[in-house]
Length: 177
Image 1 (cartoon, rainbow, N blue to C red):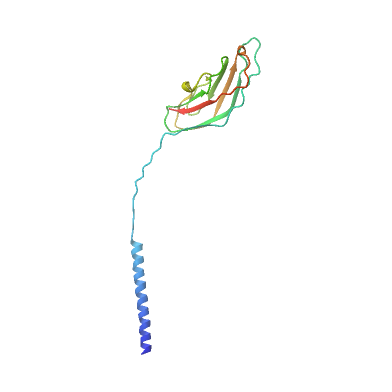
Image 2: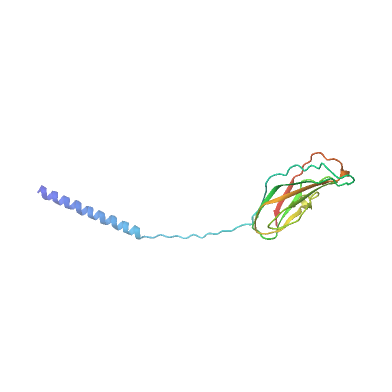
């Protein structure tokens, strides 16, 4: 009798194992064939981007020479700095320049910004260009980037203006539409 019970117990274990395997298999099949999806709506935009940067500051502009009998002294120039821009607005973008203070009478500061993306205006006298009267330097700049464009400064003086000790000015370059 114990042997029959033992056989029945073994058979029951086998049946239970089979049931568990079938149940687990059905769950796996159900999970494998189940699908879940979702959707999302995405909104995106690109705003107007205006970026301008310079490579650093120009060297000192010191006038040390002139021609006998001529009031205009020999100008000092610097072409050692560059600027780069990025803009995505349109062909109406321009670069302007202004000084934090006007130059003294008899002294002239001119500026040229090279450009491959716009129309560069050469040798612009910015001596009296202040924040309310910024001078156009490059106009009609095309969309995209203009990289490592040369900045040229020319400092001129009249002998009749006298000497001028070391003086500084801050030049602000602005890209705008």
